[in-house]
Image (cartoon, rainbow, N blue to C red; front, side, top):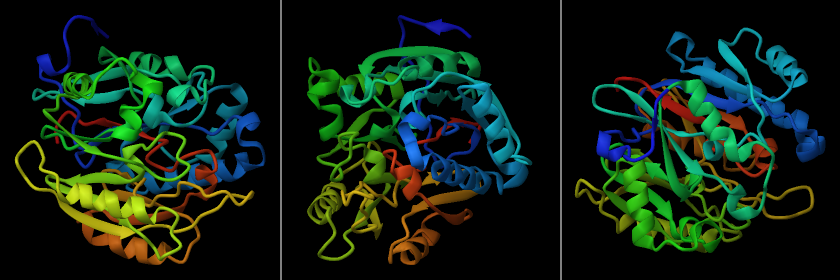
Length: 350
């Protein structure tokens, strides 16, 4: 692995490919920390296992799974749960399973070379400083063996969406939050994104979901699903706790023009509506925190009346891929869903 200090990925022709492009590998981490998950650990492991088996259902076309396990005990438990699934386990310390935010963002250039973009990580604005999380991206970059680029900005991977054609989508609530990059202006953050991700134009949504401890990560509210096409949620009834913000997000997206001059075409799927934890607190449940892989799209469900309608709404959006629903409330209890716990490595070719 070479280490690039004085040049940016963009200067060397690297960019973050669209997530619907072909994946070579996928990085995840086995839920392991009983002190964090408490009684929810086994349900989280069961949901994780179902997610991984859904990914692996593509057979030889599935991206290779790299799984971080922090201890020998976790290694053995993961091996038992995933018996028969092709994967590689890595003994690595991590704070929790949110690899979308703590792993590198993997890049590619026109020649098919890959690279790792490593951002600074400060525990989602200082909320959760867990041992190992702030160095995990660098360690995974070393394991991957690609050229490593370090960015000076604090950023989690779930806060950005990109189309591989110059557009990056994010939220002001997160990236302009003073708990991350308090000394940087909006223009400076945009320039840092373009340098690191090889993009040219930033599109800004304002706010995220209620009680989202990530301060409005874009991957829970709006996704880019094809060139010039975005996906968000519509409110599920008058009692939807995110009714007003979901309406605002759709309006903002419909007014956007991407880096290629295309006005965004916006599709919607139902919101999960009101989803509460065991204490009656509203959870930031999202159907758009899905994972798209080479052959399947794994959609998080929450045992609500909108599960079936959501799956039907997804089916025409990803032609050529099977849509699989997996219950995700056990993962959401820790703060996110399936996109939040995965980070893809692009193939050398599309």
